[in-house]
Length: 325
Image (cartoon, rainbow, N blue to C red; front, side):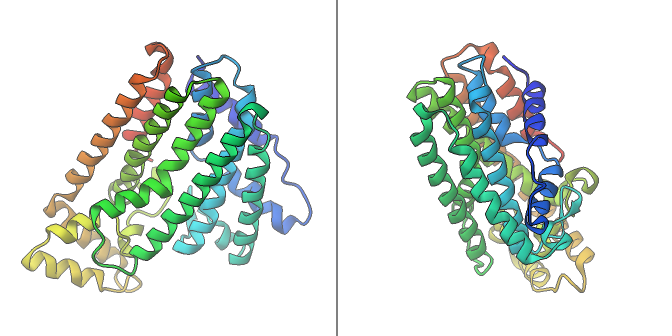
């Protein structure tokens, strides 16, 4: 079994050899830029690691892994426009460095390129991989729409939020694992267990992201801390705060939610974070993270390969669970 670092080295080497020096530069330079910003490369790593569970040769899964990574970064370009985000991985977002139209069009090309790479999946697994990838791509859009709809609602339930992050985040991790497992030769049961592992780890991953947006270190997180608070984003933390706040705390929370972020940004972040602490929603979020993480590990344990071969995936899940960036 290859280590996570070995897998990541393969992915980075492949990404470096992709040619984005094409005409017109205004279309392709932003793609090279966003892919050069780094990131955890979790999705392509999961593809190759799942493949490697069942075969020593991960080469047949590389194009699929690249397609999944390009697709993920495409979604970030469009998400950043919709969220009006200024920073991604510590650098200006594409729509800030260029403009909205550039980010939209370059993102469109990235989506097309992702399908081109997925289409190079070995023929034996091509149709099922394309079907799953297309289903996943649609689900991600559904999740994004729910996220947008939630901005206009003050009655979002925790269950609704969890379904939204399943669609927006978890399904792509699960898809990456399942496609990699198929290419490696996994049977249907093992491929499905790895899909479920991806769903549960993806849920824990996004809940951790919610926590880091409030309690993380801006220097390592790569984004401004408190961004979700400033835009009143319906995160697991805020949903539970709205449910649990009573009396004066409910009044204070609503006051800050109605306060313009442009006028008192730092004060708003500080005040709502303090309310989160008083209402105990950080612990609620951490407990739910642990719930999904434990379910994911249970899925992984049932995959019919040796415990030693599964250790790298277990280590990666733990790293995602306890990361600070």
